[in-house]
View 1: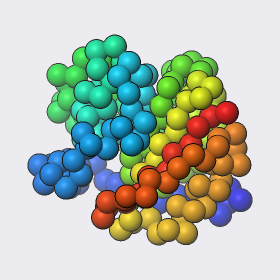
View 2: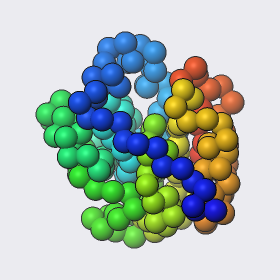
View 3: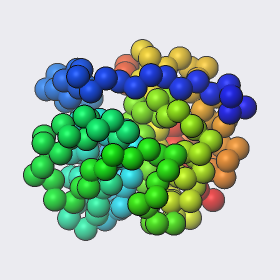
View 4: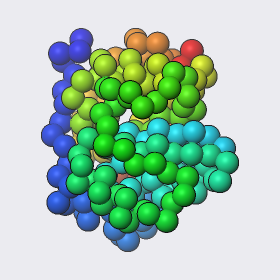
Length: 189
């Protein structure tokens, strides 16, 4: 099964302005999306594939002063951009790190793992899901949103089946998807 899970190429850091701009803020309305994705005040959130930090700012606001966000990306240039653009966020740590090797995150330390337009880019999904299972608390959430224009439904279905077979229980696919993508939500049993 793992060999059949396609890994898409990484979104180039040089084009980060395409995914981090005022028009996207209007189209996405991220403030509204934090609750359906499972984000709550006081949570410790792991953001996977943070890019230049577009979603990070909304996560930071949603978890509040009592919460914390660890935002990771494998691309050093994305992390540099995120640190520069989002330096004002006091409850966020940006790290160059791969989700398949979360050596800086303790066992069962995370309330919510958040993959926004990034799971399809993970090269070793087997190790990544194993690391997410290790770092999430019991009852912790794994929320994924994949872009409709880049990731076909068959890949989203295969991701859903794969994750559900690795220690996670699929809990919902939010029915009111926007025109950019749909959500998958899992809970660690």
